[in-house]
Length: 501
Image (tube, rainbow, N blue to C red):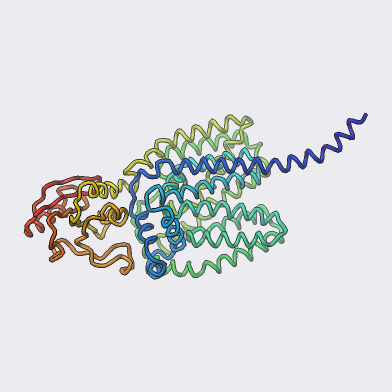
């Protein structure tokens, strides 16, 4: 007869215990998934050669603070905040591929952990864990996780700004709206297009949180973020010409527009994942609970609203969109796949689907971590390694710097300066920091003049194959000055010739 009262007395304790255990379980899961995502992105980060965009990050981060602020008045002002962070990061950890790219890998880990927290808040820890793991293995995630650019960080900020939005909606304390405003503003200054997360958040709020007490503080906060971003927006519009190259990119069909932001060019993987998700959703639609619907609505707004806005802007003001600019929306794709995968009543089925997705992504993942993986085969590391291994102290170097493309051999000098430390750059005239671009002012071979005084061995690196016009021109010009070619080495995209007097 006494057991019932005892049970009634213990019930509140058990409920309190469950409430305290649930956040602990979620936080442990978030930490483990974050570590997993970090490890997946970091693996092999030291293998691929740098390419133009990553070299630009290195060049900007080497400038003094005064030079950096002056330089970005002419170009890349939208990346000033990221360059500032990388200046601090590379100053602490160095400029190796592993050091610089580990910053992005950390950001991917933070984004994956945030997805666990986000999805758990609306559904369950199981859905959260699947979301984080799927995000970690998506082809675009594993690409930006091994890229010394701001895309991974923008994805992490997008995830955590959404987590903070949910906290602000559930709390009566205004400080969460201030935190949300601060994080969103930082996100915009890290990557300008992150401001489109405001559109996604607004659509989600209108759809699922129509009450005035929730909409009004968000509208005020969104207005403050927009006002804070206006200086960057105007400066970015003034420098819009630097992304004119987008106009020359191949035209994409509808399927590519929908899948490339998350799957890159892995169209087969995208088809496999989308078909599997659609079939499961159709078969188990009745299991779509209210929390899952809210999460799905948030993810759909997160992915489609920025895409639609960018496509409209592309049509209205010119080319401003390329799929990698939607990196901050990739977590939404992971969430949608996770919702579908976890609709089945058996949890092991979800993990089998994740395993199938991982196996489908594996060939692309390994290709991303090959030595020539970047930018259709960037060979800057090959050039640097050859010079470092074969040049003698005092040798001259001439690295071609054509005005077209982004695989200029001279980028090897900017990306790997230590490899050229014992050589003499015979073409250098003026640093890029004074030019308003990422190219030094250099002299052509025929105008080197006294730049060759005291040089008995000269390494000439030209873009293209050994028989290219640039390589033939180098032989003619240097032959007239008493040099003969004694060796020739072909890298993936360039030709290295050693000339001796």
